Length: 179
Image 1: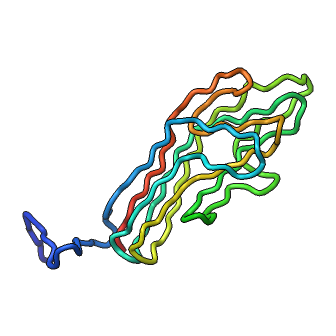
Image 2: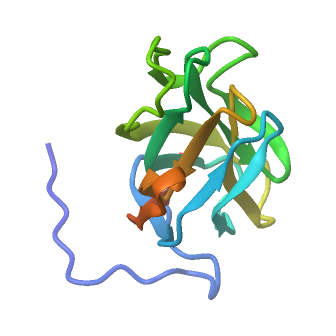
Image 3: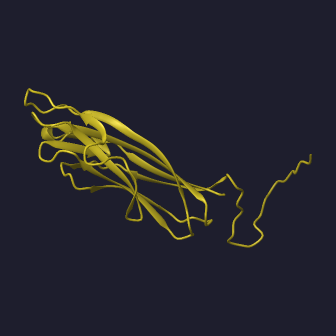
């Protein structure tokens, strides 16, 4: 067995960099500190996005999402759900829900009063593969299962009916890993 001792590794061709399979090539992070609320069943932007320009075609991108959210239902309505999607260059990469499923269920009650809301954090990781060295933009969209009688607040917590929303930063971290 041989051991290689070096003090410096320098790229042979300027601009090519040095890629070692399995090692991190670059890390970028998007932060969104302004809450967004919606009562729409149509998907809306969370305003959390981040672009990365892969340095190596065929490398992996480890996507790490951390997004605080509140799910609220109003009155004697059905259960409400947070329905997020991870988007890659405008197309859905990961859909966390369908018409009747989602994250952070807030159940109905018989008292016709607005719920205080369920406060939670969506933490998720996904490993994507690049196919070139053009910039890729990842973002998060979301919908609310119930219209008019329910809300979802992302990048924050709180209840819109009582004007008590507070921003809590969401992060989208992209880590390129050489293959």
